[in-house]
Length: 298
Image 1: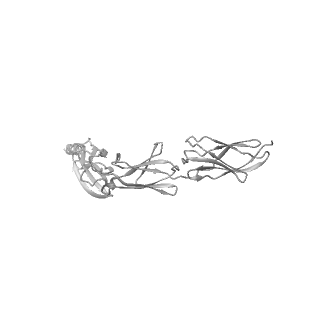
Image 2: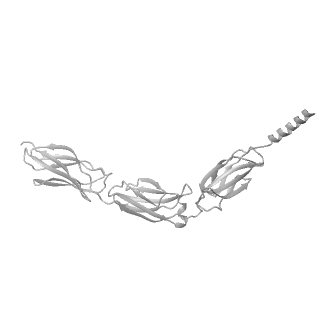
Image 3: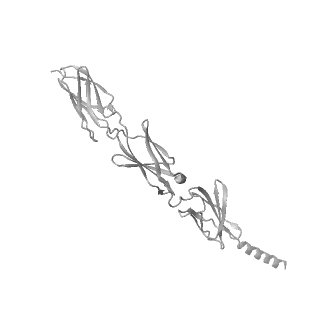
């Protein structure tokens, strides 16, 4: 009799244990642009409900319970960061937590237009600054700056600030800068544009390629500074041999900037002359390239 009773108690206890179901964790918690929090359900237990904890910086604000696999959170303030914790619950058993940290989307029709977009020269850099409508300024997570040169080749840079310093701009380059606010991860506000012509700057020193002397003249070939480095128009090439001779050679500038050949003279045969060569552009004269040339005997 004792053995039969023990056996029955074991069966009842075993069946009670078998009825306990610990729900699996939910998966893929996401927040869409319609202010709806979604997750994939826990399906291993019956009568499963979900508990959602909503926090900011570890401060608990709301607790919700639902049998659905979504929760509308449009009551939360737009563009603020929240932490969402979702747990499955079934028959007093609860799953582990699954977390999502995300921003509440900006409302439809939010004004993220850029205002007061300015470009200011600071030494050799350009300082860009802008403002966003104060009501929705906190919705702009990032700003995209589009830089286009005179060939309209775009280059993008990003910042989380309302200003940026742009370096490595080309003297006399024509630029267009655009800025737009990025919000809701992929959405962009209207673009604001400003055009800017970078101030002139002197060219770098010319480079000597070859020297071909004869008795009374010397032919000198020169490499000009690249157009991609300085776009200020070249006006002339000067050979200064003061007090003996100074000659100016007009230059028809182009983006290709092929080598320039200067035929300098007349000189006396079999004589050495010190010369200085420099390039003149819209900003003034470059540093000079010093050279001494020796004419050939007559």
